[in-house]
Length: 542
Image 1 (cartoon, rainbow, N blue to C red):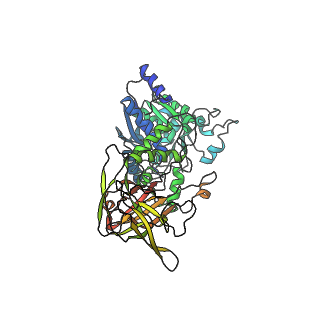
Image 2 (spheres, helix red, strand yellow):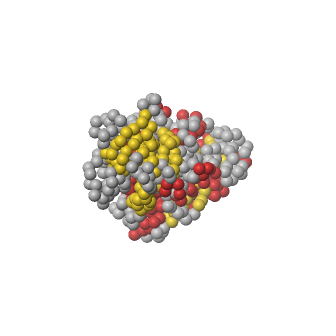
Image 3 (cartoon, one colour):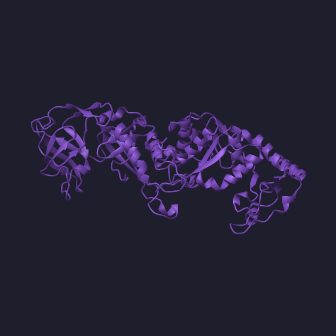
């Protein structure tokens, strides 16, 4: 957590100092109707961060009260993502663990005259709810007797009525200035197979009824949620108190994470998946945590980003460049350097008579610097961008009549080049200047640039995947802002021999190109591919 005490910590500190609570227990309560995205990382950081700071507990609890949208796939993906970020939950729990107890709580409200079965349709409830300036209208079913409500609610449970034919509503105040308190629906009929309880239930509690009860059943002390639930807090407290619980759990709201050019809606992310605009929830372009894992984002960088964003009570939008800044900051220290050429052109060093072996630094910023070996021979590959037969202004790489240094090796001087019938360069010929390796007598000859290279004898054939944001900058409908060509593939890249023996998700800085991560099936069937994590240039305004 951040060093400075935030408003959530101030509340917790007061509750501990007053003796109102003795142990802090939080929870992370996702609905298993999609994959977690970067917005969830802030809630994870806060809830698990409170556990760590106060030596308390944090439960993973699935709010699985809507079986029409939930799936075991999402349950498993959520666990994988939380573990990947480095968090450990104390208990794995489900709202469905408490369906029997919730039903009894609803019966208790009916017996107290605080809930009734209503025959209104969803549209009729909406049309009689009123608005911010007009009070709602009482349902004609609001005056049913306790006995009748108990019978009807039991018949709802037994399946006597069709979906939507009846609901159970809390009896609060149809004139309340808070719209959430205008006799909200707390149970509905829904004939959907549940991923855990199967066909046992055909009535399910609504989120606003289930959530405070789940927190109370588990002994949660501080129910930390995003700001859109602030107006729901009076209902949270109403349910809690009228179902026999005290001042705790205490709901606290914080501003959710919003980022530029980033989709934070599970509904829209699901639409992208279903319409085939991305390759599943774990597509490296997706802002899902699984997508970021496939892209190569370090979980440590995401946690550092959340700590820098901090906790506030006002909504704002964070520049996506801030997240990338923390990704680069971490990789700059933790990613080894390798040489790769994206669009290779054969380079002949005509005076190279024997192979040579050099030691190249893996990462000059690492706490313990290490090296690896590269081989130099007569035939190399350089990137097409590093030779220009007709150079543009301010070009600082190899040109006819010019010189350039190979990274960690000799200075080369141009001899000639060949082109195909279209004028495309197919081969470049140079000579190396003797004693021009670092430490040699000619090492200080001035050159315009330093370029990466690989040895044609032992290089690895690579496929590189580069990605852009899914959304263009600006406002408007997501469909109108989708970035065209957000995934670019370079199937003919060449990499150092050392890259043949790396593991899935290993991360590297490809010199002068960016940071890359080995794909999850790296090396299988002789295929070697990398996803670009982010470029080298940091545009975040510190």
